[in-house]
Image (cartoon, rainbow, N blue to C red; front, side):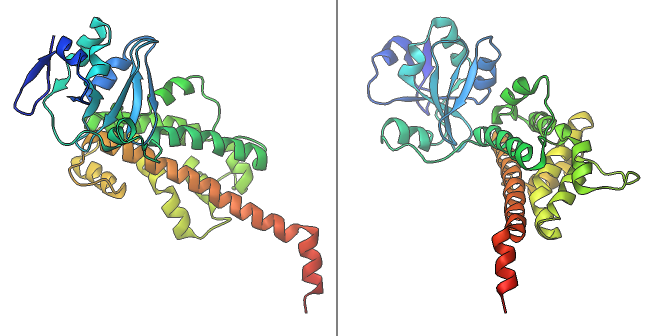
Length: 305
């Protein structure tokens, strides 16, 4: 088996690469990740924003990086030491070098200076859990209702779902299923004391709760990524026009002409930040309320001239 190793199409055999000790990297299409994850026992994990590990069986994980062109880089030796059937999967997506190798992968493997960044996939998973815990503690119930397939959906919330426009829409649907679609609407209606005749969806109810602790402009900015994700989620069922999609991506601050994989990462990051800011705003507001209602604060106010 021969791998493409040079920009001019140069190739080297797997046996030659097995003895390679000069830090040679291989390039692969981003589609290789989804191909690997199609196998039972596969897993995708993240070390930094642009590096992670992937395996298509319980053993033999590969440390990879994502470069600026959204291609996958892996050390040649890490690939050719894999079982032959796994090498064949990687080999099918091997391409000529395009752009520099992943900066964060180089920093980790050769500069012993791993990047201090967090993958949006990890951020998304963490912030959902923390926001639910916060709501349970302060509002006597989680924000997001339990979902029978939550673990499976969460595993599919990664940038490599977004390999094309339809993939971006599918990722938005997965994100929304765990956020907008899972909001406990009845619980929120009780918290904001909505008139029973007033018809408000989960996003409007959540914004109404925020408005108790911040002004309208701030609440709108915080909620924007969730609205974008939900709009794209609807597009997964009813294909949006080119203009609608372009407007949504512009609102996400995605770079013009960005690779879909980068758009997927941006979408995950923006939604994660939105969820974090919801929790942070509510926490600050509740803390201020607690301080105003605390006995020491009341005593101080009565002594003030």
